[in-house]
Length: 165
Image 1: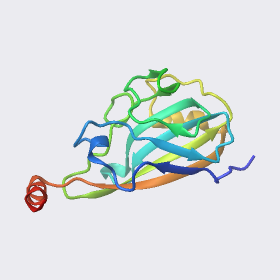
Image 2: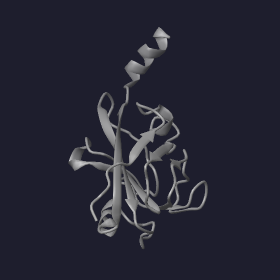
Image 3: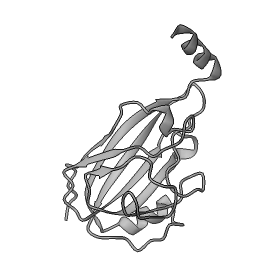
Image 4: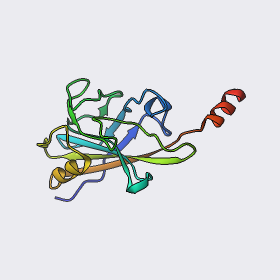
């Protein structure tokens, strides 16, 4: 069955707010999904601009069909609240979401990839992005993505910004 690429994905902002990055509290963002027809979904969020070919910030899967992933998903493998899901290892080696943290003065693009799946995946929370991608083969029925930019200011720019306001 061919993929249905008519899944619309939105995050609650056009540019990353600092509270959802390494500069702030590092909360996972709220993600809205429209047009999903499959019973389960998975999300991979990465930074393709990072050195060494990319950096995975979040893998989460076995999410029952929903139109809203709430903000601030707990950083643990087995999630029961506010949604049910499993989360795997990010490129830092931790479990769950780890927000954008590009080098100072560099703007990077962050991609949220949403996969509509035909069912839950037999994969544990110590899994990596590669493990998840391998396990999804043959189970992806829908796909959508959104790209968000973030630029981390250096301390001099922050000081200038505060003195202007």
